[in-house]
Image (tube, rainbow, N blue to C red; front, side, top):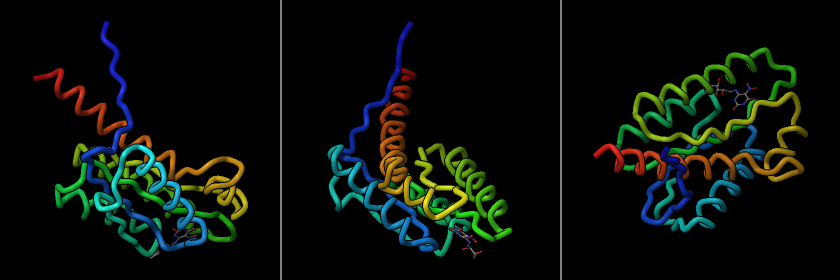
Length: 158
Ligand code: INI
């Protein structure tokens, strides 16, 4: 039996973060968390590109545009869809999630999923550096762990 686990290591990695402006008070903190995670794991700011899109709906298109450049080892997607009063919620949250999963599968590049889907702003705040941690940090860490895991699996194949 052989065990494979990726090590989150940003050394010599180039990563893009696509982040939504909608609910910016929340997404800004997700972004800070993601950058902090990357820097704490050896990432240099010069190797991190940040791309803003209007809302969570646009995250998959932003991610696909970044992946098409073939410049990135991983993409981290950050956003906050808050149910509130809007009937938009189900469509935006569902399509953004599905679109990001499809983009990762189509390009075979890890996508960190840092899209909050909550009922209230308070719940989103709690997950953007509050009582429930920072989902941006988690998404960044997961993405770079997967980059390393893919590399180990490919090395094993050859
Ligand atoms: N976008 C979000 O990122 N979060 C939301 O909560 C949200 N709501 O509630 O509507 C939202 N809508 C905007 C959407 O993502 C698009 O930017 C917009 O429809 C333009 O295409």
